[in-house]
Image (cartoon, rainbow, N blue to C red):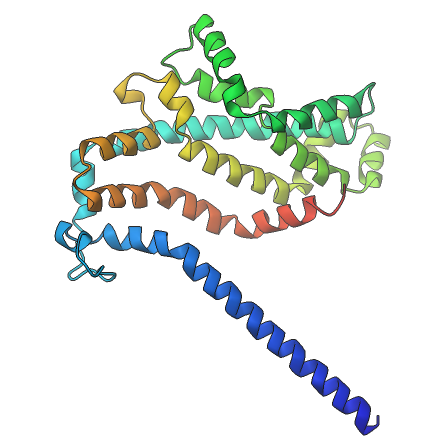
Length: 288
């Protein structure tokens, strides 16, 4: 290898390293900017009231008021709100995964008339703003006598309400080799058994993505519970925090502590399933 080639390769290596360092520097800078609201909320949840309003802002509490997290459980029935949210989220999650995977399997693997047309109709529903269907849904649930119950928050998820989940799973199902399914058919496996024993076990990354997105959406859901629930004891955590904010508006450190507690289940789920979540997003986007 002559001197000119060595110099060229060394220059290319240096340029790649400089580009890598600059890329990481930009990402760290942007991450720090996006983390500022979260860090301020976490800091405020451990401050006294005077430190919250202090100018210049105090980022590190002196001392740490861990008792803020104890007091909020005495001011509101947060455990009850957590239990209500857990019931709604769990049942909606089961319905979402079950219905979306079945519908996606039908769009990805089964052959039936006008399949692509109905898939196009399904995708077009993603363009509809939520406000457009709000009044018809309210009138329907009122006619069915579902007001002040959890049914409007759970039942639609068993009926394939999420077009995005169906789309994501369909893309992933289409990436699974057809040979696996054909081998199962030759062995006498039915459509549902093939779906249950072959397709679903191979789709863990996409299913984990659906689980995380649905969990975050239902855990933070505010407008539907506000519309359909009237009884205080049935409120989820989102309505509980809003009520807490209205009653204790002058105590922002307690509001921040309540928000941090409500955030814990989402953070735990995300870090547990992070590997599957990223993999599911990447693989679902590879094949159209």
